[in-house]
Structure formats: structure tokens, C-alpha cells
Length: 429
Image (cartoon, rainbow, N blue to C red; front, side, top):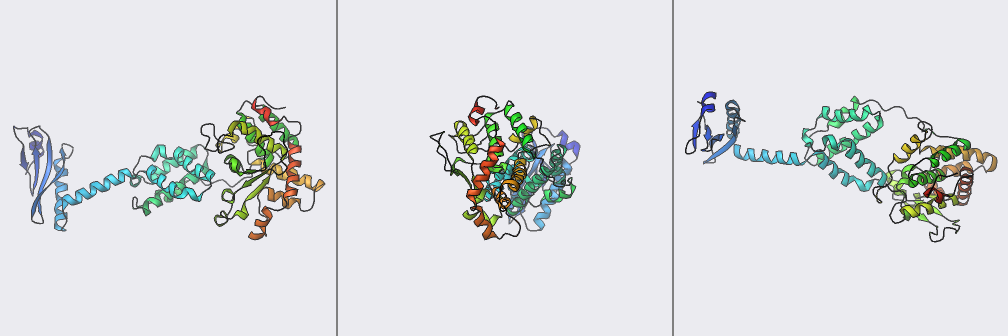
């Protein structure tokens, strides 16, 4: 049997040769000086050879261990060489099945089930928060501490809810890999209890009086910023719809607007939001009866006509500056308001509370008993106790009154402010 000194001192000769150890194991020394461990055995009546690796990367002790494993396979009636090839293929497949590769396959399967805004949020969160750290790792090599390290980075920024959402998406990727046979476990599921708990939901901060809102519009529209950002803010304020719906709004959803004549009145101007883009139960998203109708006040139409000069050649009304086919980032307006001094005081979603508060107070003085219900419909709220069929019918109901309320809100909100076309060239007021 060989020893370490014999193996170390073995020199190249003018031809290849080998030094035997035991039970078929030998050290092969090529005339180039390269040394490798080889195992000779018989299987199914034929002589075969298996290479264990090069010396000194594989030591004598390691080579003997691999020989013992190979002989155990022979006793079980299995060919060690074939088993080694199968393991090499498994290793190659594992290396190809990286977390990013599996995540993109999973996303491709799920994307059509989601609204464009949500789909963009999902893939963007993975690209930003996960792929830089785990994207190139084989999914089978990722364990709980690695997953937790990625999520802790998010937590340290104070983005607790984001950490929980990212964990859920990572878990879905691991489950998909298990179903595909590329993975065997879901480490993201196990770390759920190790994360900081999500804070109790708080009402989104919002300004609730017209003087405060006027001051905010004056300040934000005087701030140096992209005209598209300012126009998006104004349209959001005028319609009081969910920011995500506005960011992903295509021109094709707008009806009753004459784009060729900027001076022409458009009393039937309407934004029809398909049910598929609404915050609804999944089974309702394919029902046209649940399309949400947004009557557009004159001031809202003026904003859209101004925006048309900026983005009218693309599919989206409010795209990102970098890609006309991608919606404006969900952070654009939030950062804009923060920069203007409204952090913790008013957020983009807060316009819905502003509209509801101001117009319900207005309705008590100037409206009808049904106006509270109409205002809820304008915000796409379904009142408690209303059946599905009735709520579907009402989504298209009360349109004349909804237009009146939209005009009243626009007149109160935009009083004394400049025409939106001027935002393209200089601040308002």
C-alpha cells in the first residue's frame, strides 16, 4: 500500500506509469508529471476505470474513501462509473437552476394573473432586493441563514412590510422549484417567524381641508420637478383614484375626449378602468360589469391634454422617463411630496381621504341624502351589505350626479391655479 511520502515523491518518467495501492486503487503518473487517482473494477463482466481526481487536490486518504464508496455501490449491484456520471449531470442541473432562473420562470407563469402594476412590483422587488445577492446561487444551495441575511438588509432600512412581501415571493419561488424537481425545501417559509412583525396598519396621512390642499398644490407645482410628475400629481388630486391605477393608465381607457381641438368641451369624458385592473376578488376581475367608471371634470381633461404633448406617442399616460412602456415608479410622487416638505403629512393615496372628507362635508350643505353613497362609488368602494349584482349595477349608476360632484371638487380644488399647459413651461400660480 502507498503512503503520503511515496505519493508526493513520485516523479515523471519517459512514459506513463502507475503506483498501486489496494483493491483496484492506484495513482496514475503521466509523463507530463500530472498525477491522478484511478480505480479499476469489474462490472457486468467487463473491466472499467473511474477517475477520482488529481493529486494533490485529492489526497491519498480521500482517494481511499472514494474507493470504499465505489466498492459499496458494487456490492449493491450498481456501477460506480454510471453513478458518477449521473451525479455530474445532477450537479450541472443544480448549477443551471439558480434562484434567478427559477424566479423568472415562476414569474412568467404567474404574470398574466396579475394587474400590470402588481406584476411590475413583484419582479422589480426581486430584481432589486434578492437577485443581487442570491440570483446566481443554485437554488439547492440556499438555506435559512442566507435567506434571512437578505431579508435583514431590507429590515435595516425600516421597510418591514417590504421584507415580508419579499419573503412571500421568495417562498413562492422555492415552492415552484420543488414542484419542478429542481429543489427540495423552502427555507423562506421557515424564516417567517424570525422577521420583525409588521406594524399595525395606520391611516395614510392626508390633508383634509381646502386651505391646506391649496397650499400644497401651490408649493408642489412651484417646486423644480419634471412636468410629468406635476401633471400626474394634479390628475391624481382631481380624480382621487388609487395611485397605482393612474400610474399604469393607458390612453386606450379614455373615452369622450376630442384630442384635436383643445378648446372643445368634453361633457362625456370618462375614464373606464377595466375590472381586471381593479382591487377586486379574482373571480370578478373578468366581469365587464365591474369596470370602474371615472367621470372626468373639465380640469382633469385639461391635464390629460397637456400630458398628451409629453407622452401621447406611447401607450401609457404616465410612463417612467426611461421607458414609455413602463409605468411611472410608485415612489415618484411619494418622493416628490417628501421633497416638498409633506413627509408624514400627505401621501399620494391621501388624496382619496381628502376628496372623501371635503366632499362629504360639502354634500351635507349642498347635496342630497344619496351623495355619501355616490362619493363611495366614485372611490370604487363597495358599501357593506350590498350584494355583488347590485354593486356591479351601481358602478355604472349615478353618472350624472358623479359628474356634478367631480366638477364641484375640481372647481374648489383648482380655484386660482394656472392652466395645466403652463406647467410644461413654468410653475403655477
